[in-house]
Length: 549
Image 1 (cartoon, rainbow, N blue to C red):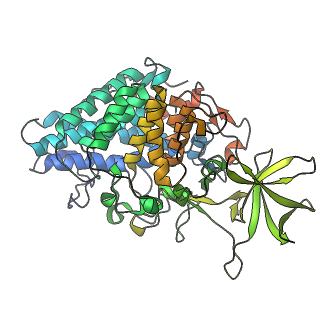
Image 2: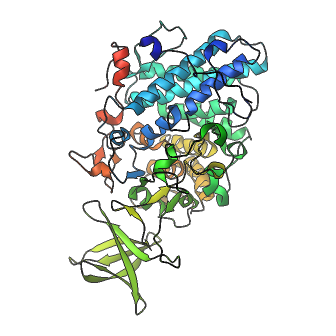
Image 3: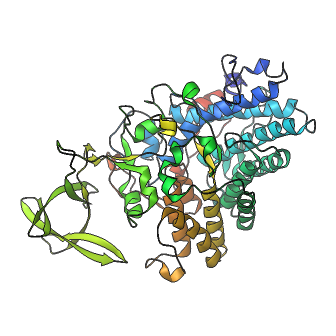
């Protein structure tokens, strides 16, 4: 079993393909170095393992679920026996096949990278050095994600257990868990090596020098090395290779042909021809039903919606697709909704009378009033206890189990295919947000706001002239992290962003994470379940692996 676990089989069969068109189609390891294209084919095999398949298996799809579902941006509308439910509600289990898939596919890719690094010779050509550098990058990226999933945040201590550092292709080399600090050190070393080796300008479907610099910037941020995080973000920004997608195209960011997106630094490229079946088991399928494809059962949370709705003109609202009910003529039903003390949605259709808006609740008609709060129009009614209850004025929506269907579109729609998705690993907007966070932690408010405002301006919302513009009670770091949340929502960052900053995950909003016994309303950064269990099957294969508490 140990040999199976650490095997370097990259795929079951040799696939003949145009690697420029399908850069991640894989080949069997035995044939990797029998032709001039062996190095290229071997590298393509590692991309393939990380990208995953059209049925939602593999590293990137499972990583998304494990990193996004425990955050505060999503709300599940039902229960399920799928182990994703236990990641979502923090009642994690040791036998979940999704965490095992992340572990096993990640290590298969790592060993594939090790094979290339061992057998290739540096300095023979710029092309071969580029490919060797890509393997260093892919290994670093995989270890970085694995240690964040299975090891506690770096900022909580470098002596905590991380993941095993497997740095050879020898099947008899079976290391135990290294510390978080040791894994991070390896990640940094690999990325610096990758940066030094890669000199060829490729599309964003491949790792490049700038991709290594972008990931280094994030790694340094996680480590608290803020000056280095800024320096490496600047390397990417100043390369001149990337530009922000304009505001009027922002909602179509993930629908574009990935190589034609000027903001994406690196993505794991999927194509309809080689990576798509019917869309039902893709990452996007749980977020939306599009053209009859997809379950559409996990929606944007009320917590996230409250934040983004502070600015109705925010272009990022285009990533949310509310499913409104309509009459036979296609007209929507005006409505208000609020969330009661039991974290349950309350929708009521409204009607007009003498120029005023009303709704009926528990056989009583209530008037909807409005007022200006912090420069924004807020709506409310006064309940029977003479208390203001703030409401959202909108339209009635289709619901599932009482949860309104706020579809999420960031993992769907690429090139017009319902749930085709190329996971974006790094993009330019993140570089500005990394700089903003790093500057905030260095107490440089002017520089932090300069970078935050670049993102806010692109989104079409007001910029901050100074800290005096902040909402009451908000400090600089909160403002920066809110902007990061708005910009990078549903891209697999939020859980890590909360806990690496020693913050509490607040999940006091509607969703089935609050059903059943012992629900988690809040998750402290010190809680055991901030990290996943090591998969039981891996411990069975290697009993010396120490399980997480």
